[in-house]
Length: 260
Image 1 (cartoon, rainbow, N blue to C red):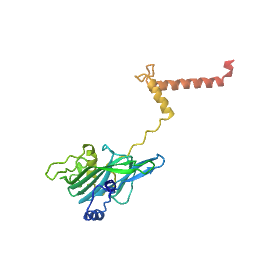
Image 2: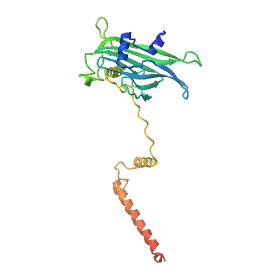
Image 3: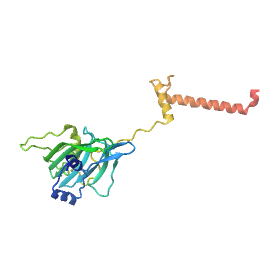
Image 4: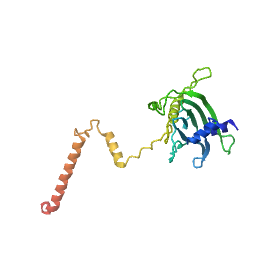
């Protein structure tokens, strides 16, 4: 199998014993990525599913970041009656997959970057994959699923060479790795850990608010309305003047002889 195709399907590879144990514990991570075409935008995008969860003994999780390690916005969350499965769908022009696996305090981590590349005109692009980091037998001496859960999201496992020297992880993915470490210790996980909800744009101001905003811009900085009177007092004076004019108008209508 081609390296790109293999990495697009999965980063970490498991033995049948591990796969059977994940299935037995009902932990379903989905590392597979796909290249999708947007007809209206006339472009290709990469689709992934943040998924996974944990029990006390074992955990597996897949999440995604942008090319610089920042959180991506989900397209939608996925509701399910079960836990430790799919949590959110992400669509992006390019993305980085963070895949992590845990047995007790031992971790495996794989970080890969994926993006479409056009090979020939009018042909479907190729989904290219690049491995950024791979670590085996990482260690974290904390029970994040239990007594040390207060440290979740603040720590990550450490990886070492065969000679005992610590391996540096990509700095820009530090927050994503910490979030994935939290997720792989989240027992009965039912929510995304790194994908984010982007707040909707603010609503347009109604005309009255717009007029009020313009008036505020041209009002004196002391809030007096230009005549030394507080805004509330100004409104009171205006109301009294309108009442006076209304009473005068009523009197004119009732006494036509006075006009003669």
